[in-house]
Amino acid sequence: MSADAALVDAAMVAAITTEGRDRSEAAALFHTLTDVLGPRLSGSPAYDEAARWALGRFEEWGLANARFEAFEFGRGWTLETLTVEMVAPRYMPLVGYAEAWSPSTAGVLTGAPVYLGDRTADEIDALGDRLRGAVVLAARPQVEFLREDRPQPAGDEGPVQTGNPPFPSPSSATPRAELFSRLQRLGAGVALSPGPTEHGTVRVQGNRNASPEGTPSVVLAAEQYNMLVRLVEAGAPAEVRVEVGARFDEDSLDSRNVLAEIPGTDSDIGSEIVLLGAHLDSWHTATGATDNADGVAAVMEAMRLLATLDAAPRRTIQAALWGGEEQGLVGSRAWVERHLGDEAARDRIAVYLNDDPGSGATYGFYMEENAAAKAVFDAWLAPLGDLGVRRNVIEGIGSTDHVPFVQIGVPAFTTIKDFRHYDVRTRHTNADLADAVSVDDVRQSAIVLAVIAWHAAMRDERIPREARP
Image 1 (cartoon, rainbow, N blue to C red):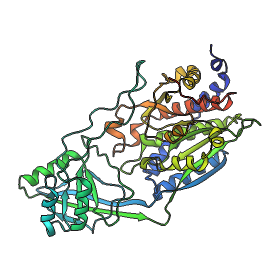
Image 2: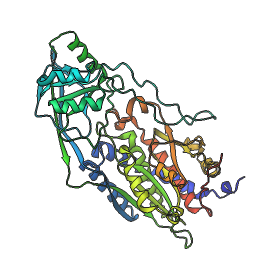
Image 3: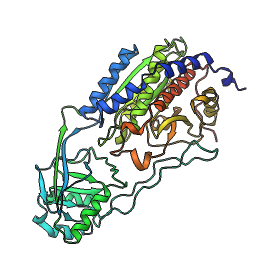
């Protein structure tokens, strides 16, 4: 038996599990985030509303020092209306979504779409006034799709492949940046493009630095986009009707992280922090259920479990709900830069536990090549077998909020979740709705986070920081 196995707090594991199983608030938290609050685009009024709600829950549970921490982000954006439909040669509603930070159209645009996917920059310039106010088809038909989720990380023993799979980009004879600069100069009314996913799933993101004077942009379901191209190429009397109504919010260029804590009680190590985090922001087409309302609800419920049990950890246990993750880990990077600028400050972070990629129950943690820390986590995971945990893996994973911590040498680990239907169906798409998540899995994830956080807060030694082969 390892030393850490001997220090597993069986009584606390049982108490957390019982509270999380019998009196969980995970369902209410998750469905408020998704069904009531909805999409939480970084910097938007909708994100701010979600942040205020989360802060209110932390205060209601009696957590200490519940607060916002602002960071510079840029303009907010809200979609207020969207119409996208084919009106000839017959009527058909089209499945499409404006890209985030797209400007509005000049009212309702109705007309024959102009296909530009195979035109060179010179050929586009030659169209001149024909493009003014026009609906343009900005790319070739989409024939390449993401059809497989990334490999599952928690199955058989062996090496794990991690990382986001590449999405096939729309193809055009003129590169996108060059094309859109011309569309803006020539006064095009709106640009339609296809998404890289199939069967009515539309994957849509956006660029927060897009010019408010640029060309409005809408992403269509690939099959419908391809149909429009075929109609235009066949000379059929195709006609579409499009309207984008969007509002830019420039009253404040800041966004905010949400933080709260359970103070440490030990006179020697009470100021050290066990940090739990997930990103509160989402993209805008659905309700951000798998990315990342499930992770946020798990972190919040983990803190509620510990507060309800009147936990008195030796180290401080702190929750952080980050903003701006989808735009490049903006909120967590800002927090790291503000608070962890020197070695003494970094030493006060005992460990960061992150919940983001994938969906479903928590199987374990990506251990970032830190074999010594993995041995500790393996011991802590052992009593949770009945909850469906599987294993910790030695590999790391990128593209989420633990990365800024890893980069400065702080031990930071992300939960292992399932990737079935995540990449091909829900991640950043119009299908990322509450039905894609089992609330039982959120309950389980919260219990696992609370158990690991408790043990990290009670351990005599810090989590090993050195990465070992």
